Length: 221
Length: 230
Image (cartoon, rainbow over all chains, first blue to last red; front, side, top):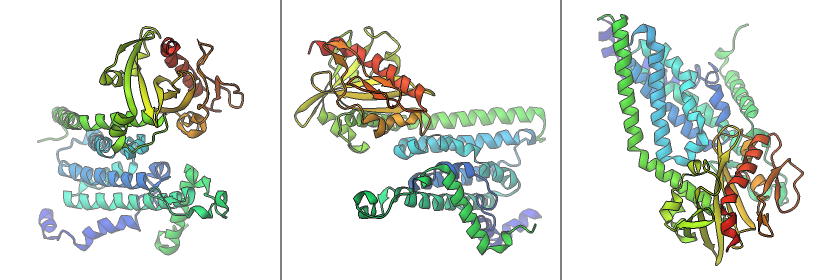
């Protein structure tokens, strides 16, 4: 019975679209669920590694969700966490290998954090909470939604940190050289932005802005 | 089929492990040559950087072929090989295990804007893992022209500072031997270095600094005999 209902549902039904759009705002993994903060602090000093990290997480998350969802009825319940770990770990090793081969410089900047995608609680959380109970297409949408929700915040934080901390974006200087005090100007980069605590503050400010706009996120107490 | 029976659980785990192992080792083998060429280009970049030639990784091979005129392999002060590949492929991690006079180590001869330089590779131990680098010397085999260091996993902000200009900029002009006697360059407590044979270490990165100190002494020594006779 339930399968019939699913077949009738179109691929981009309202419910399915909500799977993708929810994590952007109402249910963002970083700003609302406050998961995956560790990597948000560590690799957001510059925009480029943040973008690569986001893309890697999108891949791992979407592929992992689909794989788990496809084999969800075959997984023995007692070792399901181990199975989830194996799936995410293998995908991460694959990503790491490809980065080392095709984006070597970025992979050096990301260093251990590619490996640490494994411990990103968003991924295991979605496997456990969503993919184990839903079909592959839904899981795919959910994976894409959550990982992009994560990536958007990562990129936003990295944007501010690189702009204000190094005066550059994607490695290109955007603050004119003549503005700097060293060249007789009035401007200095804020070195504090290069340190992890500032990422936490930026994330905090984003959460603040988001809640100010979206009042239903404000807790009642 | 009962997916929660013991037998099924074991079978599932076994099949999963075998599949994953095949998949991952296959990918690793398939991408091996690409990964190795990246590492090789990066090594060429560091060799060139020690004489002040900064190039992109894609141009490393061409610049290397142009700037590096010879690669010698030295053992006990004697040249044992002049083959470029033999020298380049020496595994320093293995080489430093044997004593100074016993090891076979490469010496790069560079020519930049008509001046010739020696480039000495190094490898040693930091706090968390290996440290390495290249030190370039003037044609007298004594005065340092430049140095760069790399590390696997030193602490960011402390030991990892050895690869920043703040540390490496101290090296140009230092000397490694006095009146023909090998001295090396010591890495001393920050703020206390003076003279031609010492540089400041990094506060808070003492063990890494000491590692670099030992590495300099250990890896420059095998060439002392050779430099004496040039």
